[in-house]
Structures are given as structure tokens and as C-alpha cells.
Image 1 (spheres, rainbow, N blue to C red):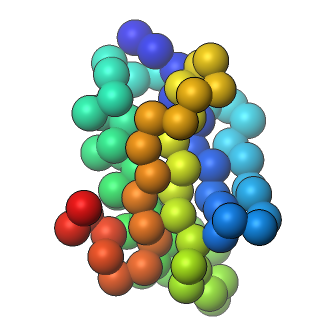
Image 2: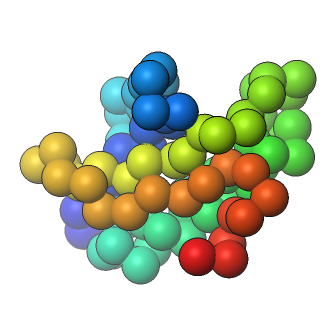
Length: 78
């Protein structure tokens, strides 16, 4: 298991998840990021926030970028 962190960014601002989550690997981290992005887009998390141009950035426990998932309508299409 490795620890992954989900950060929200629009390229200028960065919102951090400081706790992170233990997952079996990058594919599982991507699945969680896609689900998180979908929840944000649908307003299940932080309702009313305009997520246009924002991404869920997945970072491993060493600070390396693993993936990024758009929060807009393109979620899961990448």
C-alpha cells in the first residue's frame, strides 16, 4: 500500500488534502480521483463552487505527480 494525496488546482490556486489515503497503487488512486472529481462536479462535495478549469491532482507519498483528473465535464474520459 502506498499513500496518495488529492490536491485540487486550477493552475494558480492549490487546495491540499494533508491526510492522504492508503491505496494499493496508481490505478486505484486514479479511480478514487475520478470519483472525487465527479462528486465535486455534481455538488456532493463543496456545493456551489465553480469547478471550471480545476483538476484533481494525484500525488504520491514522495510528492511525485501520479495523475490528474479534470473536474469539469471531461471527467473519466481521459
